[in-house]
Each structure stands twice: as structure tokens, then as C-alpha cells.
Length: 369
Image (cartoon, rainbow, N blue to C red; front, side):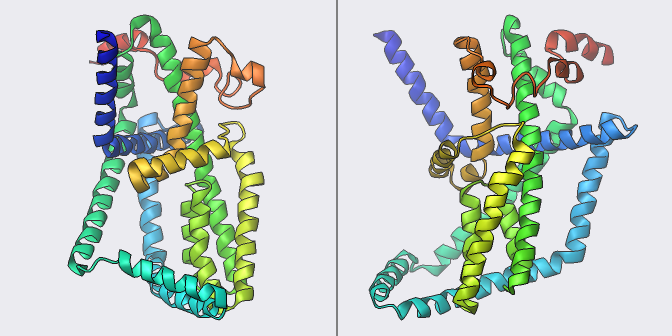
């Protein structure tokens, strides 16, 4: 009886702990993703240049700063102006759409009720509303810098933090824990690189398509579409809404072409681009991903929705390696013929090129001191 009470109390405390520290944990996880991405790029530079890993990381950071600075210098004003124009034109586009829909009798009453409900949601105290928006923006900026500097610090000395984690594991299980960490790093690293490639392709295709259709602010809409592709399933739907509204404001036929363009691009992304660049990394069931995105959005808001996919990928790897393989003794790769994150994808020899377990790394660290 006492054991059951202790277990229940521990579970309750863990739930409360996670509830209050959800945002902090997600920010740290996002920082880990940034570190994994930076180290992955640095490894690529080190493989094709004589630079050491440290200098390769420095070159990657300088390259990112230069690319961002050059992009902002060349297209920053146009991007800012395009974003402002998009924000200003969306209400006008919605008014034009509302006027067209109001011509349909059975939609007129529905729209009136929707306007009444929307008016009820607008706070009467405008100052309070603006203060809330300002606080949200400040929180987003602070969170961005926390993620950025966490990722940079972790990428500079990954072995220090890896060994710290491994020292928390009982000595007989450290080798397996090291395998799990290496598998997580490998999968998340290549998933991030593949996702960035997919985002770039989707953004460029959307921009070209909207430009050919004559939709205003095609560049801004293409950038938005590429950025929101990071959030599978829900992101492309959100990205299509502004383009469809602007298309409807121009002409219903244009709006139909815009819908067709987004459907074509997303089908191309879902059936050709993503399978080509991610087929050997990890395969996430769409229904499971959608449910998990909704759960993370309800649990942690926008940040949870943005990180839902990498969190789910991490959980899938942990469940596969620690529960299915270790606890149950099943081999999913052999039984199901899976092509993701198995022995074929993460060769055993890869451990020799990564950070060794603490037992092997400790003498080296002592010698360095």
C-alpha cells in the first residue's frame, strides 16, 4: 500500500515538475537541436577540408553569420516591407472575400454570427491587449537567444556534456547509453539537414509558382511557406491561408490556381522530396504525428507545436532501442524490414568516430589536463 502511494506521489510530482518546466525543457531541447545541426555542418566541413573540428565549427559559425548578414543587407528591407504589406493587405483581402461570400444567402447569416463571435473575443482594454502582445514578443526574443547560445555552447564542447550524461548511467549500461546517444545524434542531425533542404525547395517552388500566377508579395509568401514546412501537416495549411486570401481578393479563378499550386507543391514534397531526402533517416506515421502535434500544441503552445516532430522522433528512437530491443528483445529492423535508423543506417563503426564512453574518454581528458 505504501509503495503504491509512493509511486503515485512520485508520478504526481513528476507531472507537476514537467508542467511548470515545460517551456524551459523545450528551450533546452531546441538548443540541443541547434548544437547537433552546427556539429553536423562542422563535420561536413572537416571531412572535405584539412580544418580541425574546432576550426571547422568556427568556419560554420562565420559562414552562417556572413550568410545571414548578407541576406539581410541585400533583401532585408524588401523582406520587411513585404511582411508589412502582407499584414496590411490581409484585412483588405478578407473584406473582399467577405463581400463575395455575403452574396451567397445561406452564408450571410453564418458570417454575421462569426463577426459577432470575433468581436466578443477582442478585449475592451486595448492597452492590456497591446501589453500582452509586447510581452509575447519580448519572450520570443529572449527564448531565441537562449536557444542560440545554448546551441553554440553545446556545440563547442559536446564531449563534456555527453560524458556528464553517461556518468549518470550505471557502468554496465554506459556502452548501450552511448549507442543510444549516438543514434539520437545521427538521426536528429540528418533529419534537420533533410528538413532544411525540404524547406528550401518548397519555398522556392511556392515563390516561383505564385510569381507566375501574379499573386502579390510572392517572395514573402514563399518564405513563409518554406519556414512553416518545418512543421509537417499543419504548417503548410497555415502557410496557404494568406496566399488564398490574396488570390481571392484578386479573382476567384486566381484563388483556385493558388489552391492547386499549394496542393501540387505539398504532394511533391510529401511523395517525392521528403521520401528522397529522409527515407533512410526516420519514418513518422502521419496520423501519429498529427495527434502528437495537437497534444504538444495544447501542452506547450506554439513552441510545443514547432518542436513536436523532433520530440516525437526522439521518443520513437528511445522506445525502439530501450524498450522494444532491450526490454522486449525484439529486433524491429529484422522483423519489419525497416529502412530507418537500424544497423544499416548507423554502422557499428560509427562509434569509433564519435565520442567514446567515459571509461575510454577519461584517460584522454586527464592527459589533456
